[in-house]
Figure 1 (cartoon, rainbow, N blue to C red):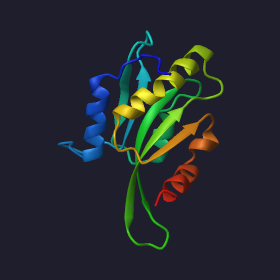
Figure 2 (figure 1 turned 60 degrees about the vertical axis):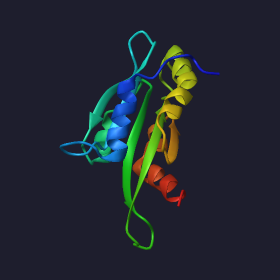
Figure 3 (figure 1 turned 90 degrees about the vertical axis):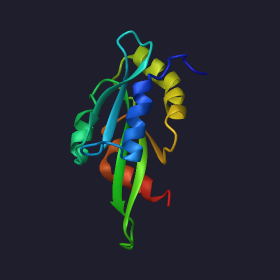
Length: 143
C-alpha cells in the first residue's frame, strides 16, 4: 500500500542527469532524497559529484531515514573491465523516529517506480548493511 506521498519532478530530473550523465560540468555520483518537512512530498535533499564512498556515507544522517541513488563503478572479478551499477539505497536506521520510518517504508515504492533503471537495491538499518564491501558484493552478484 502506498502512502500517497508524491515524487517531486526534481527527483526524476536529477536521477536522469546522473543516469545519462547529462551534466555540463562533472557528472553526479550520488543523490540523497528526503521527505519535505510536512511529509507530503519526496524531494532532492542533495546531489554530489564526490567519488568518495565515505562522503556518501557521511551524507546519510545517523538517526534519520533517507533514500539515495549511488552510481557505483567497480572492476569485475577477473579484471575484464570497469562496470557501473545504479544502486538504490533505502536508509532506515533503527534509531529513527517511528513516524518517519512508517512514512519512508510506505513511500519507498513510489520513488523506486519513478526511477527507472535501478540495478541493485540495498535496504539498510545500520552501517554494516551499507558498508562499501557489502554494497560492492551485492552489485557484483547481479552480473
